[in-house]
Length: 131
Image (cartoon, rainbow, N blue to C red; front, side):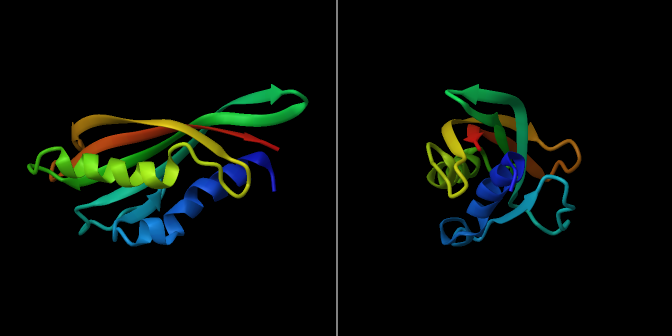
């Protein structure tokens, strides 16, 4: 597998583990259509931003954004609870194909423009993978 495919396999694979599936929060790749009846879900977006070489190794660096959607008019607590769950599976980890993640952050964005019944925040974590 290539470095890009390794990264996506490592990141998306975490949403198939019991650490995530036990939360009962649906997860979708960023380009999937989400069923209209869901009021809580995440969308996974992996953005490779630059190539990297270090001590004879070649790799890729980037950011993982987890677009987090919760029911609107409930405050930000649930958004932050989900960010804590995401920390448990994504922050400061090394995965099977060598993808390493760093510290995370949460950006609270507010009401979703497409659906004002949803409130959105973006969880972000940097990654690097050397092949």
